[in-house]
Image 1: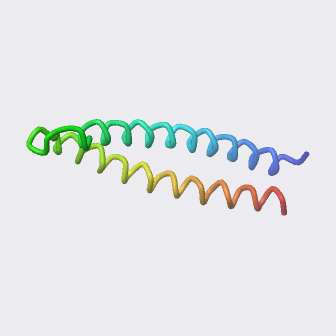
Image 2 (image 1 turned 90 degrees about the vertical axis):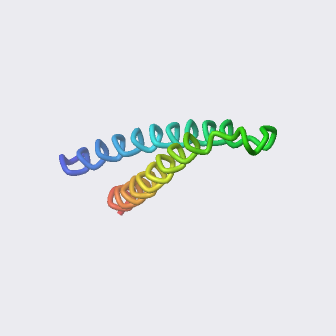
Amino acid sequence: MNEERMQLKGQLATEREKKRTLELRAQSHIIVIRNKISPFINVDELDTDTAQVSMNELDETVKELRAVNEKIKKLEEALNG
């Protein structure tokens, strides 16, 4: 295996780990959002400030995840020719 191919495989492994971390982060934001704006809580008791912060962070995480997915796709294409 040539050196360039090994580097690509290393980059792919790194990006896949980033993807896993971002997916876990997104899932935790979703849990917080659901807990803060539960349909079982009276509307006047909703913690919309915390939910909004988590929503903003979820949005950023999803954008990062999309970029990582694109990198993974390109690396896989480069490796598979």
